[in-house]
Image (tube, rainbow, N blue to C red; front, side):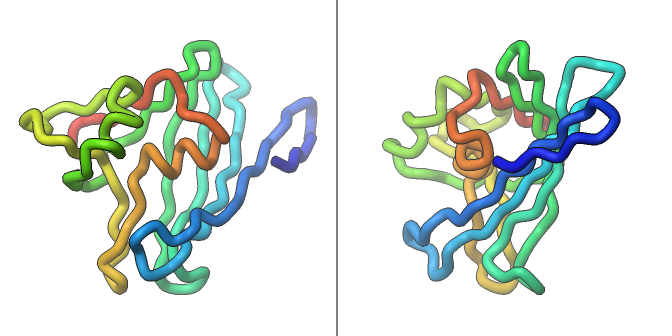
Length: 138
């Protein structure tokens, strides 16, 4: 991560590539961690996609460092995942209305029809799985 200091505020930057794991392309991402100067949370703002020009989408979520908790807004899809992937994230994800089917939130890119599991993207951005990832109702 790189840091940028201005007026006693540090903005942290994270970027990387998630190698192809069954998709046709590697996923490119970047995120800026922007501290809120009035409250104890951090806005995480970035983009992720398979192509720097067309096959990408912006994301934004809030991180509460004292609780190690991410709150993701209601702009996502749900996809069914295999048991091993679900088991990796199930204790850290708070997601309603999955009808007891092993499924997780994801971002889908229209041109390739591939996507990225949001918990996996969050894990790569932070370099760890946060204690709790809350996904607001769609």
